[in-house]
Structure formats: C-alpha cells, structure tokens
Amino acid sequence: MLEIRKASERGIAEHGWLSSRHTFSFGQYHDPSQVGFSDLLVINDDRVAPGKGFGKHPHKDMEIFTYVLDGALEHEDTMGTGSVIKPGDVQMMSAGTGIAHSEFNHSKSEPVHFLQIWIVPDKKMVAPRYQQIHFSLKEKRGKLRLIISPEGEEGSLGVHQDVRIYAGFFSDGESATLNLNEGRYAYVHIARGSIKVNGLELSEGDGLRVRKEHSLFLSDGHDAEVLVFDLRARELPDF
Image 1 (cartoon, rainbow, N blue to C red):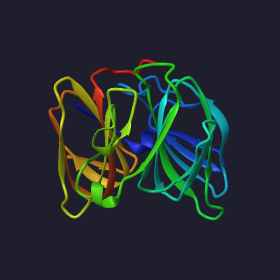
Image 2: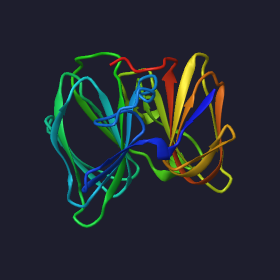
Image 3: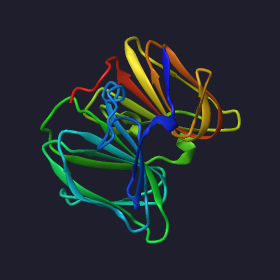
Image 4: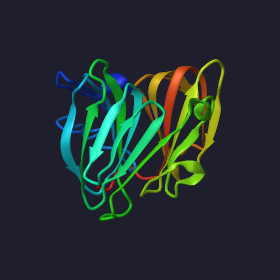
C-alpha cells in the first residue's frame, strides 16, 4: 500500500529568518493524521537566512540527524563539538541523557537549506554522542547508499533504533531497487527534483508512506535527491 504525502499539504512556519515545512506535526502545527510514521517522528525542511539560526536549546532521548542540501550549517553543542555541515555531509546527534546545541547559517551572505529529521530511539538515557560523515555524490549516483543503520554498517552512521536510511541521486535513466523484508514499512522523502517510486510520480517535498510492499523501484528521476527510510511495521512512534 502506497500513500502520498504532498509537499503542499505540509505544515508551514514562517519566521522571517526561517522558512520551514513540516511533514509531520511539529511545534504549532498539529495534524492528528500526521503524527510521525513508525519510528520516524519529524522531517523538517528548513531554509535559514544568512547569519541567522537556532540559539542553544536542549534535547533528550531523541536521535536527530541533519542533511544539508545547499549552503553550510554551523553546529556547536555542550559535548564540545563544533562543526560545519555541508552538502554531502550527514550529521547524527544522539541526545540521550541530555544535550544542548545551536545551529546557525555559517554564511553571512547565502541562505542554507537543510532537512532535520528525528528518529525515536529504542533505548532511553544513553550517553550522548555526535557523528558526522561525508558521502560523495559518486557513492549515491544512481543507487541507494546506506547512510544510517543500527550498527553503522557499510561505513554508515549508527543510530539507536531498528531503522536503515538510504540516500540517492537519480537522473538520466538511472534506477534502483530496494527490497523490503517481510513485516517492514518504508518512507520515501523527495528532497529535490522529481522521480517515480513504484510508478507513482513524486516531486520535491513529497513523501510516500509504504506498507506491505516487497520492494521499492525508483526510476525516471529528474535531478532527484531522495531519502528512503526502512522502518519497523508500526503506525505511530512511541514517544
């Protein structure tokens, strides 16, 4: 079963310095039919003005990863981590027992566009940790590259949950298939461009809930950048 979540249906938050689109309920946007999916709780599509950002704020018991599409995002946290996240980088922060961090546009002249995604962990009160890895375009061109997994398989980042996340770029006739084990769900998010998933046409910002399917076939991409989440078969996150 395939269920499309259109980009135009997402929640909207406009704060001048921040323009955000919420796939699932977040902040002041609440839709009872869109309160996460399996262990996937948040997909926020954020654009931040030059020199602006989120001041230091706390998190606890959440797996939070950041995926930059354009520009550069500067990160600092109470573990002493300081980094700049650019396209191709994937940053994972396990909040665990508690952490505070800030996120600012690194540039004083150019906007930054990024996705921030929250995964509900399978265990609470773990020690906080920070991870960041760069995945080249070549690794994702015409294929689904594993970027996050429970045990950090294949050079991916680790996550405290039974979820595997893939990233891919598709254009010019490129295609890929992801087989799903029995009893698994999936979620597909189109970060940019357009593509077909099992024959359904999806465009930038669209999402796709996947239930009771044996595989996903991605084809007919036009400058498409895609994230695919392989999830447990459960309807709502436990948080």
